Image (cartoon, rainbow, N blue to C red; front, side):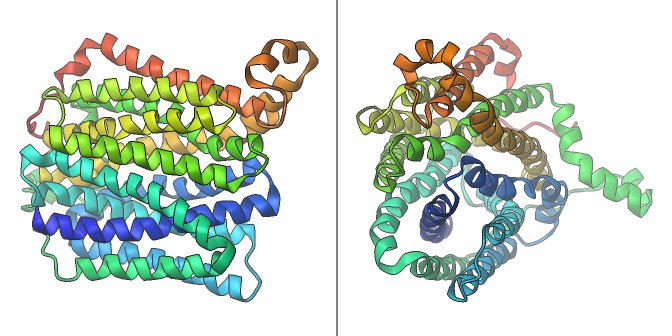
Amino acid sequence: MRTFTIIWLGQLVSNIGSYMTGFALTIWAWQLTESTTALVLVDFFYDFPQIPVAVVAGIIVDRFNRKYLMMYGDAIAAFSTLILLVLLFSHQLLLWHLYLASAVMGGFGQIQELAYSTSITTLVPAQHYTRANSMNSMIHYGSIIIAPAVAGLLYPIIGLKGILGIDLVTFGVAILTLLPSHIPQPPPEIKSESWQQAGKFSRWRQEATFGLRYIWKSPHLLRLLMVTALFWFFHDLGSAIDDPMILARSGGNTQTLGLIGAAAGIGGITGAILLTVWGGPKKRIHGLLLGFMGAGIAKTLFGFGQNLKVWMPAQFCSSLNFPLLDSSETALWMENVAPELQGRVFAANSLVLQGVSTLATLLAGPLAEGIFEPFVRSSRVAGLMGPIFGTQSGAGTALLYVLTSLGLITVSIGGYCCSPLFGVKNSQTKEP
């Protein structure tokens, strides 16, 4: 756990810097456009390149040194941040530059994250998988607590330039923690004789599709993937519109956005600490589905809210569930896939989830601005929806957010109705 903890600390520092940059760029883009679609497209361009990259990312991670892949990912993200900083200093930074940088960071970040997640099984004993993954939840939620507060405080003083500079320093910290660390490589996979005799293109095709074929031939993993894909579709559709919804309903108040982010971070950290002490349920599928249910209920209440009195406690309760569901999901995959196969299988899982996430993100802006906002303000609906959501800017987006949250609850109930899902074992399965 010592090596894992050192690497974890470096990733925590780096993520705080990246979240500060994301927060500052959200403010910059909103002030420039005041458009939900403009903000949603930043997420879209971050997610979309991960789909084609996932096809080869698993092969790369299973074949090459995972430590160096993590370092390369951090270095490329740092270089992209540096380019944004140079453009900002020269007064040439435009919205499409932000989209391009997001695409580069998303694509190479996919490889970096995959290398990091598959390294856990070679660093941490199996009984600590849930704890290690709950510590990874602390990276995300710890960043949510610290980054908005610090960025909100510093943005008026040092501006976007200063925050991008801080981000560059945090990337350096992440790389420095990786340099002395030893990450064991899994034993090489033993290839069949038919694979060795196949042509080069045939071997590449088998490698590229291995993860999907592995999941397809493992019925319980396939059902697990289908349930989680549905959950993340509804979640990411709602997540893509929550910042614009808050900004629209608060009159563009960035302090409100920062406080809600802090509430999310505190909830996530609290959930991660409780999970680290507890260790999670013995039947991890219960942790996954109960986490789905808890997040859906809290997010539904969040969507009905119109001020911080509702938003902050609802956000806290929502984030409280994510360490449980995230750690349970990841641990199930770790325990059911051998370490030397995890790169390709995890990449296949990521390929499906990123495709779903990209679709949800792409739909979010047009649905919110083109359909739900006019719908709520129409004369036929205003009398019915007005008392619940209001008729001001952001009301239609809130209605869409509530519907996505109800979708999370439905997925949880559907998961419990799918009895074969409980056949996912807490032990490794052999390659089919």
